[in-house]
Amino acid sequence: MELMERVLGAAGTEGPAKDVAREVIRGLLALYAEAPALHRVLALEGLRVTPAHRVHAFDLRVIGVVRSFLAASSLPIRRKNLDAAAFVVFQSVRASMLARMLEQPPGVDDEVLAEELTDMVLRYLVAETPLTANDG
Image 1 (tube, helix red, strand yellow):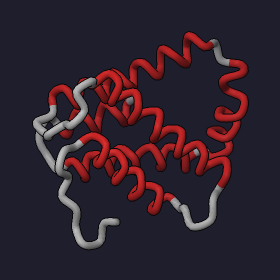
Image 2 (image 1 turned 45 degrees about the vertical axis):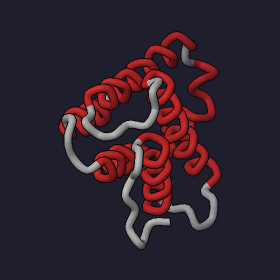
Image 3 (image 1 turned 90 degrees about the vertical axis):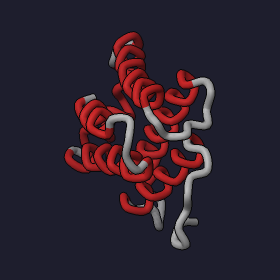
């Protein structure tokens, strides 16, 4: 939560969208890297032993932070339903990170995943995202 609030709050309503998205994603990947065994156990067993209402409450808090950022942003957000957009972005990024952590697919390290997720989030959220020649 602290990471999301710090990065999205510091970004304010201005700034390069790609930098903000990449910083959030890299920050989350760094959190996973600090305690990979703990995150693996939480991913595999956490939902079984944690009351569902606590997991749901946490998810809603993070989604709320994302939604607030989208609502305050001066970026050309292409999604009209910000509640749905915040939910989709949060769940998509989290699911991809968890799957990468558990499956360790070949050719997908943290840097590759950060770039792929950044591209996905920007293309989903921001209208007419400018791409460089190196973007795919």
